[in-house]
Length: 207
Image 1: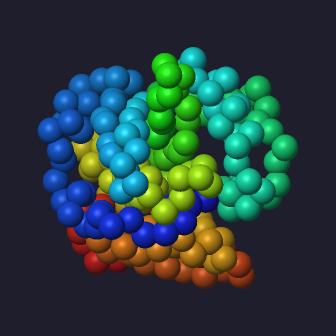
Image 2 (image 1 turned 90 degrees about the vertical axis):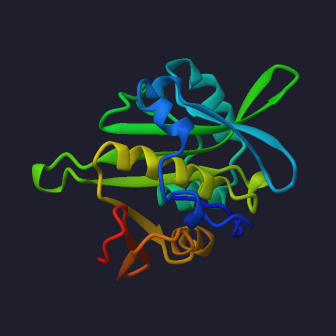
Image 3 (image 1 turned 180 degrees about the vertical axis):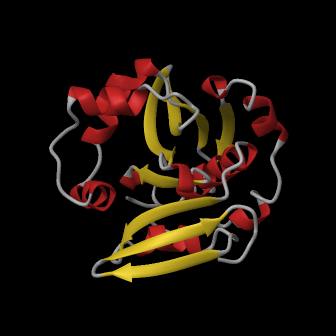
């Protein structure tokens, strides 16, 4: 799991307290989810739903990731994504799996600069929880992209009845840990060697 390298100026606690009108509209058809956003540095980006035709955009985006970002996201090094991984990442049902990109547009060319997704737990006893993960391209660290994606995923998850997000984060990945710690959501941490298991409460209940 990789990161937003620094904390954004905007507190997520003010953005996830209630579903926004844009999120409420997107609940009808999440495949059409698209919300413009302006980064602290003035860059305009789009937070949108992942689409099946994004495979080549994702392949190109992965090629721009540094070794550290790859390691913190996948807990190991990879030279590229397989066709099966590209298929899995871009064909999303928006029921058990919800996935969003952060993209920029330059001269009509859309570029993926970050992504976030949650996967609802399959076990009946824990279907109210989902695993969440993020990736942000290094040139855009420190602009609050992971926090922005988290905010949208939280509102979508709440509308679907989810009560918790879970994530496994490397202990050395302090920026991602900071994103969760500053989310404004009740949080529990459990350490196991070099990995910290994070649990976030989406309904405001203490864990």
